Image (cartoon, rainbow over all chains, first blue to last red; front, side, top):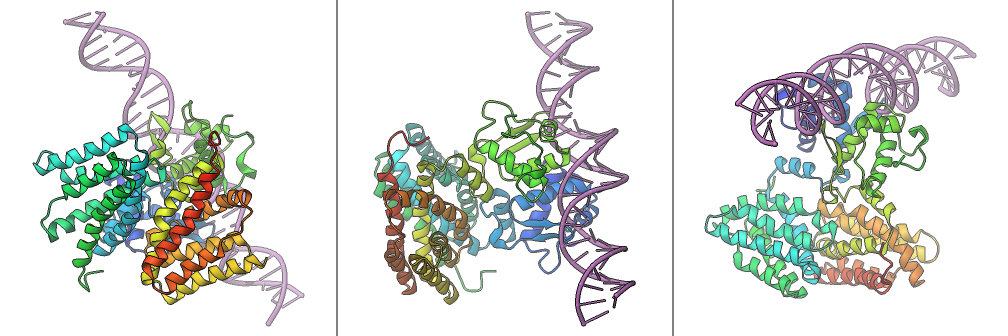
Length: 245
Length: 245
DNA sequence: TTGGCAAAGATTCGTAATCAATATTTCCTT
DNA sequence: AAGGAAATATTGATTACGAATCTTTGCCAA
């Protein structure tokens, strides 16, 4: 009963199938700390609680161990791993984490990561982006311009722009930050829009694009630094003591 | 027979149990591209090929989908996901990736990531490391000094130093790069030691430590940039055309 | 030939029952 | 009190069966 508000069976739950439904329910419960004092249930208990077969339970648990949230040993049971073992760059973990608190604190952590990654990605893109990749970046910018006039979704356009640059870095590890950046922007928009009713800064985005297209490595890095620096400033000015959970 | 050189059963294989053994075997096979032309086997085929039960097969496949390598749908079968969907920061995926090629190419991609992350981590550490964290950084450096005189393992000491700084950043996302940095250093040592018989650069490491302890944010960033810049220079000078696989 | 619809087939999804392996705890014997 | 053996709890693994979900095939009719 700790597990979910509704102890109903999982058959109508989210997810493509029972296993994914349970994965989602358990992952969310773990991340929000629903088991913090107590021990994690055994396979048998989980199966019973959710009126689900043991196989499905085992598969969901195995997926959670694959993501670093759990570990299991015979006779000892299944235990929750320390947060340091969680794979924070996993899409699901990121999603659950965000539900726990869309606090400014988490947004700040995201942004601290972005300020390290994205300027360097822009520099690499300036150095080696292919024609196709340059075009994708420009396309993202054009979507943002279209969004200014209500012809496109401003958030999705913004995300497309940043992701295009990550891809254009030519380094698959950079491209992995897709989800982090996307999540950060989705969260960000709730704050930045609320705080200063400002719309996305087209001029500064264009500066990044122009520098990359001009193969200006230093310029691309600097322009992107400015872009994200703005976000961080906004977060910090709006950070009033006691707001953080 | 595509799967593994030895079509023996999995009972003597690596891994804590059958599921993990199969996970490892399949993960490695996928990453090295053993299924590149062909379709991925069905559950039934996998079970038969490895003389293993269907449940174990399903659990291993589920773990691989959790890591982004596979996806499964009824009637359609199990299919390998594009590399862009793989979770490259997963410890296992990283390990498999490294077995595919410990090429200079992969080492360069690691280093491009480090040059973005670690200087910023050093800067954050300089800004907010606790006393304990400062002590851990100094301890890492001392281990490196001890290693100079054969009293400790130089590689492990080097890793400990860099990981301590990642942790001291106070941002859990930075701490996640533990594995990437550790892997990069382990790979790196094979090259850097071979190319220039040089030992780890204690002086430059000490400069990073000193700057962090002195709360010198800019200095810490610059010192770490120099450190990793050296590695990148070494990689680039040793990069002869045709070496990349 | 073409269009549509129904039947067959393949594959993952899900349940159930059962035994094995592995630690831990309990308890008996010395 | 010590040591070891037995009971016990929990994950690990096998097997067999049926359900759900698509795809493909093939038939029938316009």
